Image (tube, rainbow, N blue to C red; front, top):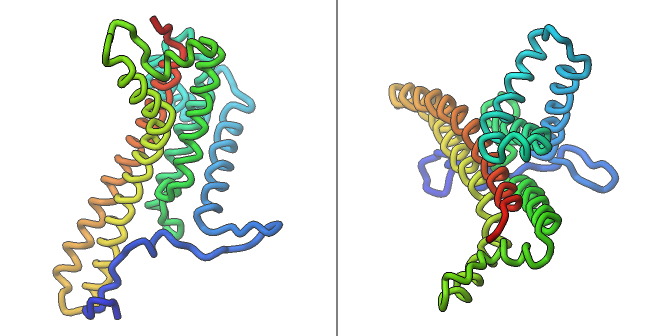
Length: 256
């Protein structure tokens, strides 16, 4: 019986808590951590199988992999960074896109039924990786003075408001940027999964009561939510990589 006395097991933060499945060397692995490892293995195995023995006339698997690779390369990296600058970052961005996408897709896979990115730790690590690349690349390309100007938005034409702008830009670029990059992905997956769990549990609860017609409505909403989540999952992977490219583009741009 739930706290509200109606018996409905309302979903909440408990939907994102999992007991350890096993322990390796003192480290406990729960369901979400295992799915993250499986995701890594799937991405590596897929592209290894597709391109490990690439042929001039590609087979079906190679064609699918080439289509996905080309989508990220031309649709995101080239559009943001250009072909000359962007080519070296294509492998990383392709890996990032498919890793985030598959992490999200677990939400609608039977037995898994949890988007890995709905736990803030995983988006934060990915956002921190992008942030470190941006910082190191900015230092490498512009040196210390150039890095300072880049992260503070230094522009002497701003006059008296320049100090205020520099402080805002400094905190925005070094602290707010990686946080919002991670939270955007996390929040969408968290909210989407919570809604999906709510309609799924409601369907089962209503089916076992006298409100069977309402259970049918809830089931239809569950199917709609699954389709909507599939769309959102792909969009969030796209947005995450697009933002990563835009940050790198900012590091490569000449500051005047």
